[in-house]
Image (cartoon, rainbow, N blue to C red; front, side):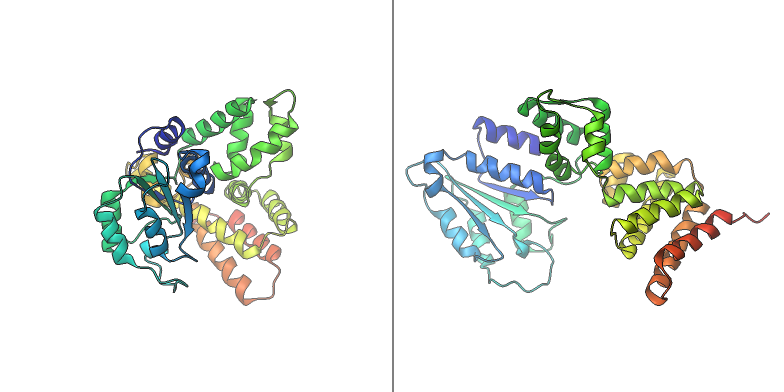
Length: 344
C-alpha cells in the first residue's frame, strides 16, 4: 500500500487495517498521517478513542492496554505508537522497559475494533528480531522515505490546489532544486510563498529565488560543479561564502566528499547498466540526488572524480592536524587539482 492510497482511505473514511507500520523519517508525511488517523475517529469521540504514546517515556504495556480496550461509545479506537526503538538494532539503553512478549501476543490476535499504528522514524528495522518479523507479517507497511521527484511534485501541487494557489512550472523546478526535493522542507516553505503572492495566488520564480534559501547540500553541489570545471576563482569564492554563512568547514568538506563519492558510484554502476531507480535503492540515496548525479557523470572522467575525492580526504586530514585556515587549505587543493596535467 502506498502513502497516497492510505491518505485517500483516511480522507474518505474507508476500511482501515488493524495494524500499520509507518517506516521512514519524512517528518511532514508522519504529521499528515497522524492528523489523518486522528480524523478517522469522530471529533466527539477522540478524547476517549484516540491516543498517542511515546515509547521514549511510556511503557509499551500502557499502549497495549489501551489497544486491547473496546472503543468507548464508538466503532473504532486508534492507538499511535511513536519511537519504537525496540524494533531497531540500536544498542542505546532505553529509559523505559518494554514488554515485547505482550506485543507479540497482541499481534497474534489484534483487536478488530482497534487500529494500532507504529510510527518508526528509522532507515530500517532489525529484521532478525522475532517481533519485527511478526509485525511485518501482520501490519500494513507504508514506507515514506525516498519519494520520487514526481511524487514530491504531486504532493506540492495538491497542497497548493487545496490552498487555492498555483505555482508556475519554472518556480516549482527552482523550489525542488533549492530544497533537494526534500518534501518536509518544501512544505515548510509554502506558507511564506503563499503569503508573499497574496492576493494574486500564483507563485512565480521571483518569490522562490527571493524567499527560499538553498540547502547546504545544494550549495555544495554547485561547488562540486565549479571544482570539476577547474574554476579555481569561482570555487574559492563560493567556499568563502559558505564560511561567511557560518557553515562548519569539516561539514562542508564531508558533504563535498559525499557528493564526489556519489558521482563515482553512479558512474561505475551506470556503466554496468543500473537504472535510476535501482541506483537509488542500492545506494540508499534520494532519487532526486541520483537524477542530478546521472546528469553530471557523463561530463567528467573517472580519474578526475577520484583525484578530487582523494584530495578532499587530504584536506580533511590537514584541517584536523594543522592550524592552517580552512579557506587556505581549500585554495591549495583547488590550485593542485586545477593545475594537474595528465602524464603523457
